[in-house]
Image 1 (cartoon, one colour):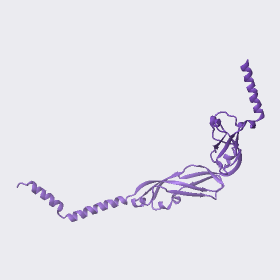
Image 2 (image 1 turned 180 degrees about the horizontal axis):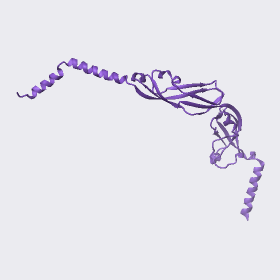
Image 3 (image 1 turned 60 degrees about the vertical axis):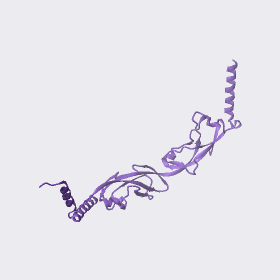
Image 4 (image 1 turned 180 degrees about the vertical axis):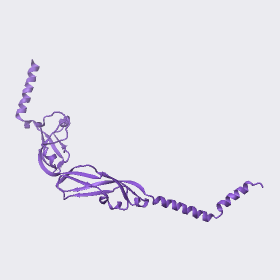
Length: 243
């Protein structure tokens, strides 16, 4: 018996349409089972937690061995969805601690509550170390600094000294506070400028003074000995020229 093309097509059609409802439901159930097995299968995710630390107001934080904690956790698809990948923070309060070295070991109990339903597989670094110093104040003179060797005797700074605050070792080691370097030709067409001050690390102005006013002295304000020296130099140059 010869099978025609039309009969083949008819058989294929019956194959797909016969008990279509039951076949569709079976396929749907299989897809749902596959999806559920994927959703409930444990998977791993890495999170990065920003470290926030609060210290006493009379102290300054001078070192910290890490600013981010890396946490590797495992859980189901639904568990992991509850934890955001961004803006996760871990907080430490040292406001009652004395100045010095402080260390904390980070375990599951220190992690935010959003990790409660997850299996924590690794935390790095496990130990966070901070070092704080007492905050002190000190009054120090301002030093005018030029890009080239210019005599600062010809210029005045206002204020001539400022009060700074900062970490004890940093402040105690300071004898002066420098201005930013002033270009040599700055006073070619002006006699007064404002210039920012350069504060070393862990120091700052105690009253918010960040700039000083630098003024070029008039000839009448030039020290007498300096004027005399300039005159002698000019006379020497004249004599050499005449000779």
